[in-house]
Image (tube, helix red, strand yellow):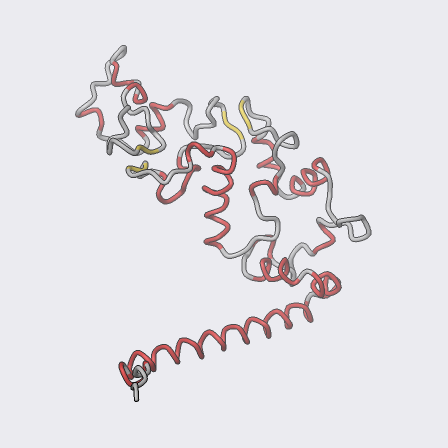
Length: 233
């Protein structure tokens, strides 16, 4: 008679115990989340009717400080019209809703070079309106949303630009508007490069007229390269 393969408990009792513990922990977290969401719905006050159906949106608000959540925050009716089909708002109304709190951001779209607000993008094209976990929101707004339009810079690259490792695209670019035509965070690319590469003058003479004053003359693959670690052509 063929003997059955030994179980995980027989092969590695300690690993089996860890697996069982993790499973119980996951079940406890799931149960705790359901209890937390139920408590959220009960404490949502005038928004309770919204939460009954839109639990996912309420969960996103609950997991982040974005808009201060429902309990003590702005509330659903601040941004949504409940009796309109879809409950949403058109581009101009959406902009007005966001600008009522974020007037400083709206002003950035009036700079000489800016993303075409209301024509091709709206606030929620890039920003999840209800928020979410901090890591997810940061990754979306610093990288994912940019590369949905600027696919050629999405990578992955064998040699990525190290400057984008932490902050993504906004390491170098202003997301809303800028005085620079490429939406750089500095007046020109040289100033931007020197904001991180401070000691380059030791290797690259910066006298007026020097070719080394134009970083992109050599480092053309500035977003990342698949053939040169120094991002040369």
